Image 1 (cartoon, protein in one colour):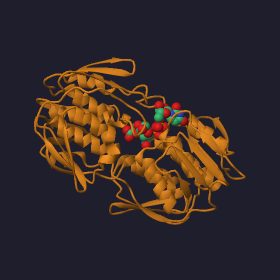
Image 2: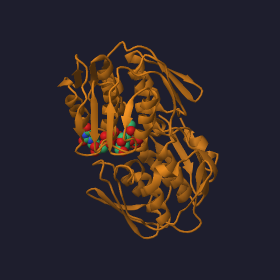
Image 3: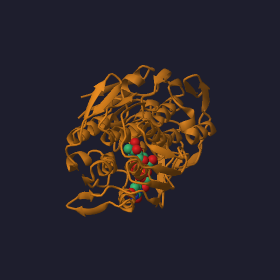
Image 4: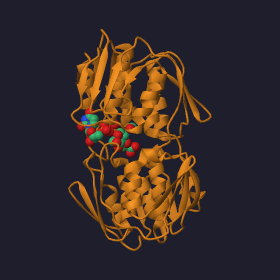
Length: 416
Ligand code: EPZ
């Protein structure tokens, strides 16, 4: 198993090019199930999770062919089953459920289990599809869903915001009979990207970017070409890398508008953010101040940036509090940061961070995707050498980490 070795203490300077968003690419790839025509997705990052999605789509009969930075998807659905072996590797596999049901009236999808960050049920996905007329039963670890007469439009009100449930229902409703209204829908930029692609495929959707989406089902969708938006979480993560090392990075292709709450918190902490053509610059000349943040659905502070921001707060002056409201167990990085000299206590869903002057390198272990990069950030700032094991988590969602960081001066290498 690979590990990453970092010798900290170098302020990062230069340009980092932001890749296409993983969490947009995953649902967009499942759109390949919604049409017999060819779907071309541009600006696709090379990531392990996207390879897993390509495997899954292949099992359903949809071939996914890389063409440079694009993916070309095409084929006819030959199989309605998403097996446990793939779903257990990646929970986003459940996003094939809505498209399969809408397209062929049946789906058998392994139930995703819990994961390192929480229990993560899929009840909202299932209730939404049931409201549209699907018959669903759970048996032997699988979701068996059918809609022999097709799905019907419905009024669906989510009791709380779910990104994945919004995506599944959006895709299913695009091919349902009649109008579906989705209230309390997620407004994340990745949802807007999905809606944009669905509209390019012939879907009729109103309310883009708002929490109420109205979808008038159409008989069929056609092929389209869509460029995936830049990854806002990768952007925020590298912004933290500039800040924690006291460096100066230009984040090329980055969209500041997708990171409003994160950039506000960073500015409050003393980080300078300057918007330029085709990206923005992040630099820090002076000390960092502690700032409190609480995770919320978009446009609030994203849960996927919570761990990385905590690394920054670990070396800020004064105390700060990070409250996690989306997932119940997303503080696995805390004991590892503490092993590097951070002073963080967790009380329920909040972590109190007392800033220290410096972190020190240590052997640490990655526990999930965002927690892995948090350890990379801490290592970049720490005195001495840090070895991070289980870096396969990192490869799921960050493209070319060592190349991007080494290109800006980091002393980083992958050890097999
Ligand atoms: C998406 O997960 C992202 N994944 C996650 O990114 C992200 O952390 C999360 O949204 C929140 O922003 C992808 O886009 C592939 P949710 P998703 O449904 O859709 C509960 C990363 O690091 N819930 O919005 O699974 C759920 O347990 C990852 O890239 C139910 O109770 O998240 C959670 O507490 C990790 N029932 C909350 O809602 C449901 O049916 C929000 O989850 C669905 C969700």
